[in-house]
Length: 202
Image (cartoon, rainbow, N blue to C red; front, side, top):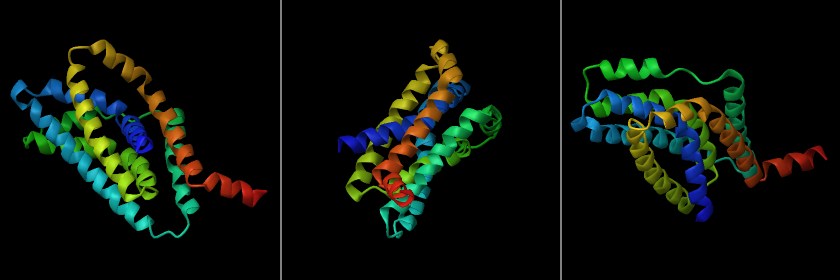
């Protein structure tokens, strides 16, 4: 259970460090009465991404050998390397254009969450979900819910502490990349993929 909680925390943090800055921008662009709606929009958008990841993981669950599933760990490793080499995309335009649209704030935030986090979240979640048991998966999803609530609150607090936001904006990409690579390697080791490939090459 502790491993599942740690996996959930690590996976969520790795995909959401940069999103803290986006949350700060969103909270700063809505009035005080509407700020609670940002949380529900974040929850809705994340739920869509988690559901999509669960469907993909379920389909991949029919792969007979666990070490083959472990090859999915290559995805987070490549994502981390790409981030270190190419840098991150600028999501400011997405946030600005969506928040200007005359739609429900919950829908606006949900769309922003899916548009800015979709590829990364699915790329990280699918390999983890695919090799998890039902019990482990339940713990990870509960952990995600608590982490989402915590990050949403921290994103709100960043309005009052811009210095922290500056540090995250400067170093968040590198932290994310390192965690991506670490998660990918963990997935490949945990599923026996690395051991199997070493044996084949040996």
